Length: 386
Image 1 (cartoon, rainbow, N blue to C red):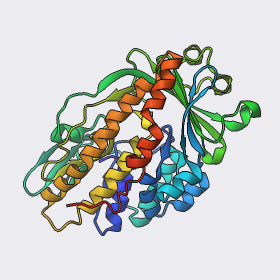
Image 2: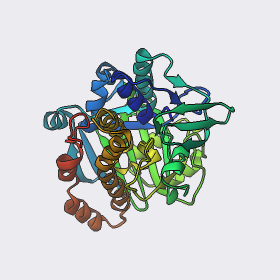
Image 3: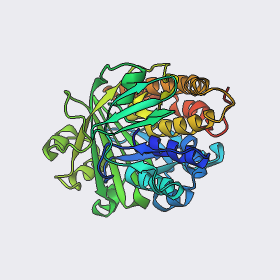
Image 4: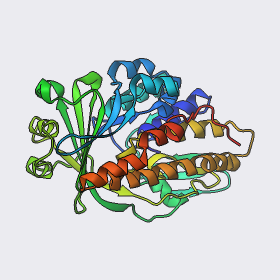
């Protein structure tokens, strides 16, 4: 269920292993929706295995570093080397890509394996599980029966209600602006460096990096605001964006000044407490359906990709299906829980007001060492399972 990044990676991985897979997606067509994503080595290993290296090289951007800077004067607070250092240390590059481009490449890879795999216009409204199969009901009145159902249907997952609970996600008190600015519009002296730059400020931060081979600048601004629309396609007034970043660094201001003013999107950031149970005997979950993650570690899509690869491997274990699913969740749940919790903690770090306190917090945290020691080295294709 669900034709997002995680669902497509899972489907392609399973078809390559000889499984018959059907991906049921509620949308009537797949359009250009969504922000940019960052792919570190832990996820790129999976994408390369699916044959996406040429596509990533064509449309991706390889940043030289993460740079954490103060919102007003641009003081450099912390650096995580990427580029050649990341590839040498972890075996694969780090890419910045438009979600739409990555999604299109994954869809092409899946359809090359099985042109009938994707089924559009299928919104699930309920399911029933027996010892032999899972029956899924769709809004159009049709039903399907399957020996295994994988819920990759996002933060509002219908499948999650069957496996975990029906409790809604919790609003974090923060919203995210999403902008795409043609790089050529921004004066050369005000273009950010070839890095993923995180501008940290009081109750607010912004992330800027390039995508589509450097032709577009991605801007994500996370602001503490009241609850509002959860949709990625909800447009908001440019004047509110302008107000949220009044007095920020000239590079931030340049991006805001040169965006199409009717193309400013903003959505609510929601979260859930991590859970350790992801499966029933014939139903399991992956990605945002089970562990929605705030964007402060740039690992939400990467965790869904890891899930998909590990699940495909777990289904090859010489064990009954229920035990295969248990092996998958027991391996994945602790890692994704750590990512969820640390991503939440990053929000506090990025939104410190006092300059001295901010410097000390980045010094004490040493984000670069932490991520290089446990996050990026992970290999979904070879990590031991049992």
